[in-house]
Every structure is written in structure tokens, then in C-alpha cells.
Amino acid sequence: MADKKNPKKDVDTLLTEVASAAGVPKKSAKATGAVSAAPVKAEAPAAPKPAAPAKAVATAAEKKTIRIRQIRSGICTPVDQKQALKGLGLRRIRHEVVRADTPATRGQILKIRHLVEVVGE
Image (cartoon, rainbow, N blue to C red; front, side, top):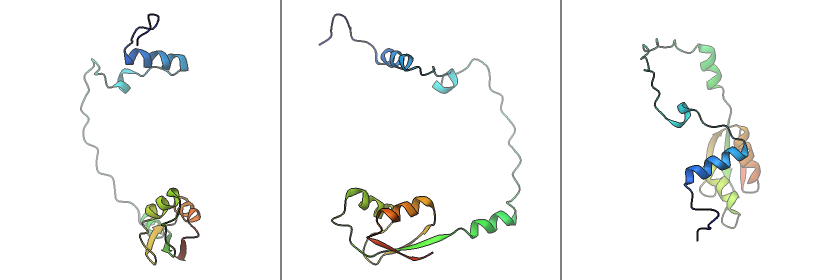
């Protein structure tokens, strides 16, 4: 039921009104995907980059890992704990996985610390 005061408007005009009221700047032609009139020059392909130095390769090999074992079932746990188990890749009791020792992994372990144990670091 369209009101006489508010006739049915186009979605784009409504979004523009809401964005202007919120103070969001308008997108440029480049961001919206509009084609510009100026021709684009093709650049020559860049020279291949030299191989990484041995020091950088050594630090990548020294990245810490952590071995996690599931010790209890996740059947009667809340959904977020089940998602943490799945995110770590644990499927069943006594299943072990090796993951990178990152703050994200540590946070998942902390959430389900009653279901898993850290076997090795």
C-alpha cells in the first residue's frame, strides 16, 4: 500500500538518500566500475623478482606448530564449541592434528579446553 505522501521510489534513489543522510561520501567512477574516457596504456611486464634470501626461508621453516588431541566428545556442547572443533579439524576422540601456533589457534583451543589437550608444541 503506497502512501500518497511517499510514492514508491527506486531502490537506488533510496540508498542514495540514506547514504547522504549518514554522511557517506559518494563513490568515484573508478570504484563503481564506470568506464573512463581516457585510454589505458598497457605496461610492459615487470621483471621477475629475485629468489627470497636464505634467511627468509629459514624463518619460514622455524614457524612454531602445535599438536592438538581431542579427548572428549563434542556432542552435547554448544554450537560455537562444535564450530571450534571443526575449525581445528578435529573429528573424533583421540584424533590429533598439527596446526600453526597462532593467536587464532590458541583462542580456539581456549574455547574448547575441556574437550582437547595440547600434546606437543
